[in-house]
Image (tube, rainbow, N blue to C red; front, side, top):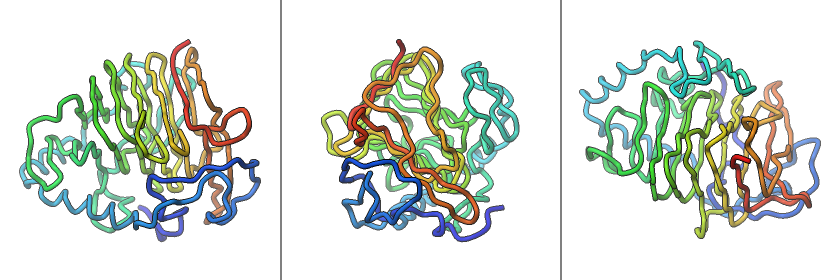
Length: 307
């Protein structure tokens, strides 16, 4: 069971999508957010309240559908849906030299629900919750499909197929969460929360994804690990291109000092993911990382693709 106060693990709680990026030197120890050289907040909206409002919308889901979704909780994760990684109850054993991670499944039991409302895992795509076995709009209305986007709860895979949309956010989806790419896809921004449990993502498939191209999100992709062992993994065949007005990729408050893994044959252009700050909380060391260019500045354009 989760213990302690979630707020103890929060870093820069007012951070949303806007940042001011500056050149910096790597820091051995964490400094207060207002002095942190990599990014500073550019918004004052309360992130916690925003997330609570989103979660409250789940209360509109009909009970019958909710029960059907709960039945999927016990689906087997013994085999990776894409056939390369073997999943155990609490780890990934990978043939691709990806890390062995705990908490593979979403937090179905709500043990790590930080707002005290029970199970709080979700996949939010353009204001639509895709994780409950069906599709629901921003006001709880049921819809049949969301063109180009679908989530398989049994496999913990969000598939984007020639999808053209805006903001995607997930919470407590565990370290086995995957985004499968088919065709050419574009979105505005991607944010993944781990909330002390796990919020890793593996990009897979044979398609491409462009994030924030020509748009104004400060950071294209933010992995908000929130004191969890979370990282980004990219399989050969998936092409991911990040455009940030201030930063292409930020990985924050992970317990892993290496938080980006790529399958052999994947090239990274435009930036190298490096540690930008460390700190200790409750006896655990946390790391902040960012994609940095050759001059040590936060990169605004990063591409992952096959050689």
